[in-house]
Length: 294
Ligand code: NAP
Image (tube, rainbow, N blue to C red; front, side, top):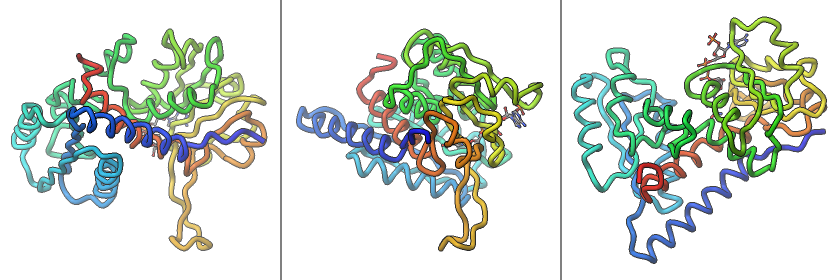
């Protein structure tokens, strides 16, 4: 049976470390990190995600500002709001919760965020800096995975890492991070996607398998090499009458059978998911302490 890579515990450890640093900053009379979040519209899931981020700020002693904007706001008005926050010296980090209404260009809005406040790590500047192995705000999910590998002392150098999925927010940055000269990194990386042929055979050669394709229980035990490390990014709700909520969460990996074969594995829930907020808070601390752009 594989070692369980516990994202819930690790994310709490990170939050405790950040809270301890905030307490030091307070004692030193320094500036308390301040995160601003823009929420456009009233999508239920987005409200929940933003609410969780604001609550986490509160728990660890950060300041936070939630800017709620109506669904009908124009692109120009939203861009102006981003400009306001860019220019506000009291705010260290800014996130714009996605998705945005269809009449607003995500690219234009992302590009408007000042790179040194882009704690989601989505701007071209931060993606480029990450690829160059320069100090950067790394996007929350890839950063969370890197932190899990580090804190569980998973050897990556010289290993074959197969990433399934090439999205801008998970698979693609993950492949860059795993190939970087550093730790975690120095892996030989194969990035796969929906056009990849012989995916099963490729996955079977992975020492580290990072799965982010968004298909429930896609990866089965016969796709996994004995002793592989398996990171499951997928999250799906499936109906389950035995649960009070009426549903349970599953990942992109068929957990029970793969856990029998892997050496270490992230569960769903409680694996990669809880790491994302901790990563955002960490980036906001870096922003407040001017550790990325100086
Ligand atoms: P996405 O944008 O939909 O991208 C999916 C990727 O998987 C695409 O590159 C696609 O290939 C590839 N793909 C689809 N079917 C495939 C197949 N049969 N074989 C190989 N590759 C295939 O997804 P995402 O945003 O990266 O998210 C992936 C999953 O992670 C989702 O379940 C999402 O909910 C979850 N997620 C979780 C977290 C977290 O915090 N835990 C964060 C983000 C996402 P093409 O490029 O060729 O279309």
